[in-house]
Image 1: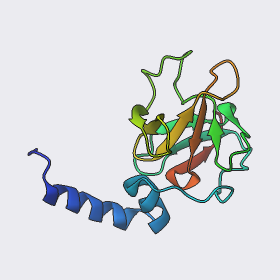
Image 2: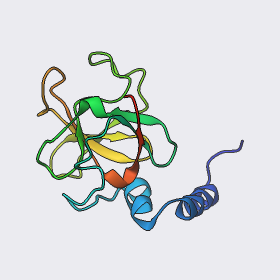
Image 3: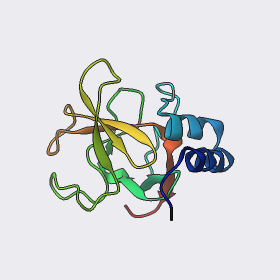
Image 4: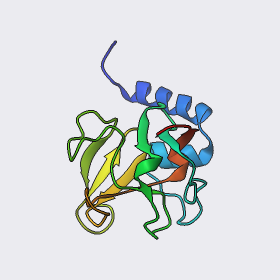
Length: 140
């Protein structure tokens, strides 16, 4: 494969526009955020796995989901985490200053943020947009 070019990037964006709903495209490709308390998975209590809407990678287990009161689905750790070791997860962390303070953005193709005000034992709160997820019911 050749180097990534602007043309290749534009072609990839057009492909995503065809595959995703406008809301999914906005959140996953343009770093948008859905309105609080509007997401389909906010109040979902079924057992299962939450996967990336773009690549279908497992991101979060329902076992780690909790009601943070923030208006977005929240999880205490990523799927595949062992303690604080995220080497077997499908997420990446990167610095983010878009919220008016230094924070951490968590990405696969979707975007969420992680905060250090979550429940024990992790102390983390992964706050994610519902439109960036697909839910697969079943064992988590």
